[in-house]
Image (cartoon, rainbow, N blue to C red; front, side, top):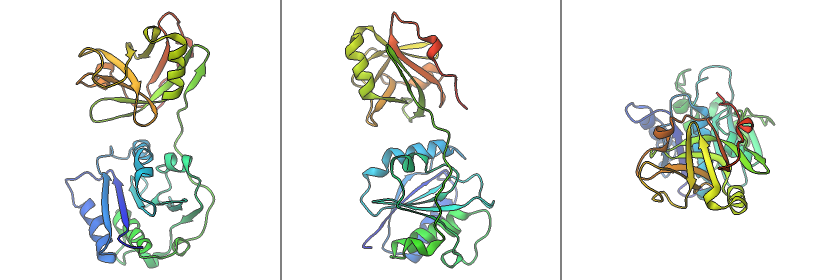
Length: 278
């Protein structure tokens, strides 16, 4: 594989030696690797956030990219390490649900339980599998080792509990599934379904309710007045909640899993709301 891309996603932060250690191990085995940092700012142990971040960006990478995902509250336990091979990509991660979004979209062509210690660092311990196991496996994989060399094939993997929107005649209920650094709240409501409802109800009559706040339909982040919530079709193909040059999440007091409701201003669909999920 010529100048392979290895993309890293972790909850390590940037203040310690952890990320540098991953990069050093990869480069010591495969000096030609191009290492891309997706993010190292995932909230500590937040498997769901990591799954969403990976699912939001992986498909824009070139074919052949190897993804290493290290958000691993179970490090050192009996949890498995996975190597998933899809039509275009490879994913190396603990089997804890962190690949839920990716493998929900792309059925793996091969799924391996990574256990062949020949590919691990000889000094491997029990507290740093990202460095001692996952990074070297990614490097050896980029050198052309067949996926099947790293361990036996398996057919199941763990998934995170999923949040699904619900569709009604005069409304859609969903959830906040991600909050970005600007405070925009991304939901699981498909933009296409919201547009369809907007054409039915009319722009001026459709509203989104989140917590005790209401938002009006908009088309860009700069729409509306400062301090006034809007909701709009986002770049991920789902509805987002925003406020001009401010944080919608702070204004709402939002957390991941909070319910949202799109409906007519004149229609009370409170009974259709989902309760907050943990």
